[in-house]
Image 1 (cartoon, helix red, strand yellow):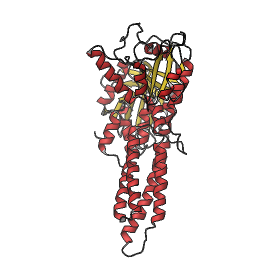
Image 2 (image 1 turned 90 degrees about the vertical axis):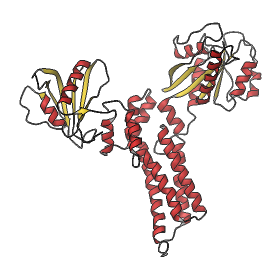
Image 3 (image 1 turned 45 degrees about the vertical axis):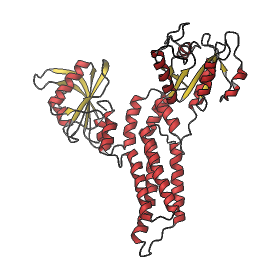
Image 4 (image 1 turned 30 degrees about the horizontal axis):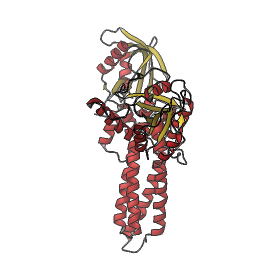
Length: 459
């Protein structure tokens, strides 16, 4: 990838639309636009950040290709920090492909995925956390996810991380001064004051890390696995929650052999519901494989919705499942509330559920709103945002913060043991390296390649 090339790509999604946009960025963007663009009157110059109406013509044939609006954004006041031209034409796939081909023929090259945003990062228009927020904002599937991404794009997380970085740098300065002048006795290391600084930074690091559960739920959704023995009504419950016939319902056990995953919004939070095969002693190899997959899904769930049949007594299979859920975040629902209540609730108390069992009816809808409220409450178990409202929801950010915390904890312990400042400084430098990976100060080219490869072309 040559960042000095002029690049171009269609910036709007594939398919037909009222408007389609082609974006050009680089030193030759204006010259390419002038080569292809014609107006009804004389065009002596293109002023920055002003829309012009005209047509794109083929230089070879002189024939018009499309009627467009064109805007030039001169560096550095553009998305990439370079000269950027956007051509707003009609959103037909053929028109956009033809327009892009003419731009490439005039000297641009096709942009790689995320290359516009990568140039914005390299040119100092945004840091790496903000660049990632661009992709998150585009991919957001709920209002909370979009709000979280917009906060990151506006720099809320970056400011929190940069504050930690600056304070950690101040500690390193004190340590290096003690190293440089320690032999002359000119600078004594105040171990007590430095230990207090370690403690304050670590406290704020832990607070920021504590927001990950809440941030990840907003960014990715809350994973709920519906489980229970066969024929308790799991598929019927999924259909009732979704308000549509998504899963096949029959009176025969073992109907559900594979996973069915759907998303349900509750109070704006996306809940990723997974309907699973009933857990029982398998009758064949296929069912055995299905039950094994269910247990793997349960291990990765944010919460388990355990469904029981209230029209019959608790069975050994139910009791085995209740035992397996011990220590897991579990919502217990007792289905078939429209039938005579046979299941004895006192039998459930021995399993110490987190809440009283909720009686519902997947058939009539009784208790469904209360069940949604319970699921929503389970999703709000993460720590609140930091004082400045920063939340993390990205695993890369979490791992980097955890690494910084580990290095600072090790440095603080070394300080308590009165280890030489040189060795404490090594831990502090490693912490700075980890913090810098979040905003891009210390991110390697491999990290950048991985992040921007996940972007769409044109952004």
